[in-house]
Image 1: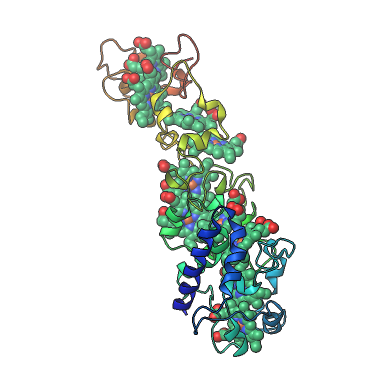
Image 2 (image 1 turned 180 degrees about the horizontal axis):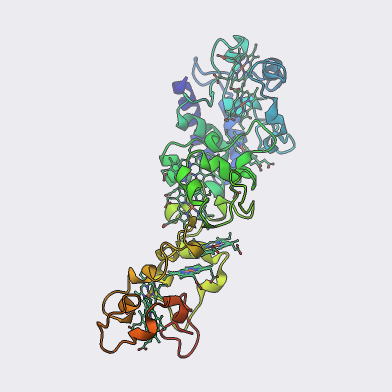
Length: 330
Ligand code: HEC
Ligand code: HEC
Ligand code: HEC
Ligand code: HEC
Ligand code: HEC
Ligand code: HEC
Ligand code: HEC
Ligand code: HEC
Ligand code: HEC
Ligand code: HEC
């Protein structure tokens, strides 16, 4: 079965390449071309999908599949959808499955999309149409692709509303694999993404895809923007500056001090001040003595600093625009 599917897609890929910039439109041609019987054993389309298929897989049938008709992809008016004219309805995704239908289910459909189906086979089926989309530009190098995650691990197409496309339910889909991130988003300070399991949570203001592109990107951690900072500036524009007096670690990477998901310290901080600051500012200046009270540096003003938080004085930790804000104090 794997073998026939692969043969099918290799044929398709060359057709898509010829179709070139026409993108999704090229696919209709690709699938039409596929109807030409190439090899003797080439699996055939039934030519009667979806009617034939729904005869057995209708609402009261076995493995009911009519839910696909509620999905946006069932739009018959759009020639690029599986149900558009010239395409093969159910078999646009499940592959040429005449033998399956005619054998009453004894022979398998070309593409099953179950746990045993190799993920490449599943994904090639979807990518025959979606591969040329701008949103899938980075898919070949995407972490999810490399890790063998299938389109249908995230997308549910046999229903009206795909939970991963819905702001309210997206995070739950991600959490099925990303338990650690679930825990981070339950911490006291967190970005307000949906966390349905926590009665005290903020709800539905943000989603994972406000920062990440699950189809891959040219940035680290599949971020929508090429750097962490650019991702943060999308919503925290004021932190972009420019500042007269900059604080180097802020320019470098917001995650020097913040956990973008959540933290048990206030303001998503990686540690509490002054310890946060002392990870980088050590022994040589007044800061090291701020809490200890020991005069190690003769010129420092330790007594004023003792017992005070760095932020009491260095309030402009992200940068300062005050002419005398060089020490980020104003
Ligand atoms: C005559 C009845 C019949 C027709 C017509 C039919 N199927 Fe099936 N189909 C079955 C049966 C029976 C099974 C269950 C096989 C099993 O559980 O092992 C099945 C299972 C499937 C599965 C699930 C395979 C799996 O193991 O996960 C898919 C997908 C499928 N059919 C697609 C189609 C498509 C597409 C068509 C139309 C081209 C179609 N079927 C037409 C009877 C039919
Ligand atoms: C856009 C691609 C696509 C189209 C079009 C499509 N399917 Fe599916 N089908 C899938 C995927 C993906 C799955 C795996 C289930 C999942 O992950 O949601 C699936 C699963 C199935 C199953 C197994 C369900 C089960 O309970 O195990 C059957 C049967 C099936 N499809 C039949 C059909 C029939 C019949 C049609 C046409 C009416 C159809 N499919 C149209 C993608 C498609
Ligand atoms: C025959 C071509 C074709 C195939 C095969 C195909 N798609 Fe689509 N898909 C489309 C088109 C065209 C649209 C745009 C439909 C619209 O919004 O009008 C679409 C839309 C979508 C959407 C957006 C739905 C929304 O809510 O706006 C998702 C998600 C999607 N497809 C996933 C898949 C997955 C997963 C597969 C494989 C299981 C697949 N597609 C296979 C053509 C295809
Ligand atoms: C890790 C989960 C995940 C995987 C794997 C995944 N997607 Fe998506 N996809 C999403 C999410 C989340 C969105 C909604 C994006 C948004 O709202 O910005 C989306 C949106 C889409 C859309 C509609 C919007 C658009 O970008 O055009 C299509 C079509 C789509 N995905 C197809 C696919 C196909 C095809 C595959 C497999 C090659 C795939 N996806 C793999 C999570 C995933
Ligand atoms: C089927 C399991 C699965 C699902 C569902 C899933 N992921 Fe992943 N994801 C993985 C695996 C495996 C990795 C690679 C190992 C890791 O970093 O945990 C990964 C990695 C990531 C990474 C790091 C990427 C990188 O380039 O370093 C991000 C970000 C991510 N996933 C976001 C999401 C989002 C957002 C969703 C929901 C829309 C999602 N994932 C759903 C399995 C999944
Ligand atoms: C406010 C932006 C933002 C949101 C919202 C967000 N992330 Fe992230 N995520 C990041 C950043 C930034 C990184 C990279 C951290 C780094 O490089 O130190 C990251 C890293 C990751 C990683 C890679 C492992 C790691 O922790 O470094 C995974 C997996 C991940 N995020 C999953 C998710 C999931 C799942 C969601 C939704 C539940 C989500 N993220 C929501 C910004 C965000
Ligand atoms: C999509 C918009 C968006 C993006 C992108 C974003 N944030 Fe936020 N951020 C928010 C919202 C909304 C809040 C909550 C504001 C509130 O509760 O008043 C917030 C709050 C915060 C807080 C305060 C948390 C607290 O406990 O009060 C910090 C710190 C923060 N964000 C840092 C970051 C960093 C670092 C990045 C980049 C990794 C980032 N944000 C990206 C929207 C965003
Ligand atoms: C050197 C450590 C450090 C770095 C790097 C850093 N921050 Fe902060 N951030 C803090 C501290 C400390 C607070 C708490 C501020 C307070 O107590 O007044 C904070 C608070 C915040 C807040 C919530 C309060 C407010 O000012 O709106 C946001 C949002 C925020 N930071 C965003 C960012 C962004 C975006 C970046 C990257 C451009 C960044 N931070 C880099 C230390 C840092
Ligand atoms: C990741 C490392 C790092 C962290 C964490 C950090 N800083 Fe810095 N900080 C730097 C670097 C690097 C410079 C630039 C030093 C230089 O130019 O010699 C700097 C400069 C400063 C300056 C002096 C500005 C000047 O040019 O004279 C102050 C004040 C300062 N930091 C305060 C803080 C405070 C308060 C915190 C905790 C909220 C903190 N820093 C956390 C790395 C860090
Ligand atoms: C009571 C106010 C106050 C507190 C509290 C304070 N500072 Fe300062 N800090 C200053 C002033 C004022 C300067 C400028 C000194 C100068 O120009 O000679 C300064 C200078 C600095 C500098 C610039 C380098 C240097 O030594 O001149 C760094 C780095 C710094 N502080 C870090 C910290 C850290 C880290 C903490 C917390 C552990 C902290 N400060 C607590 C007032 C304070």
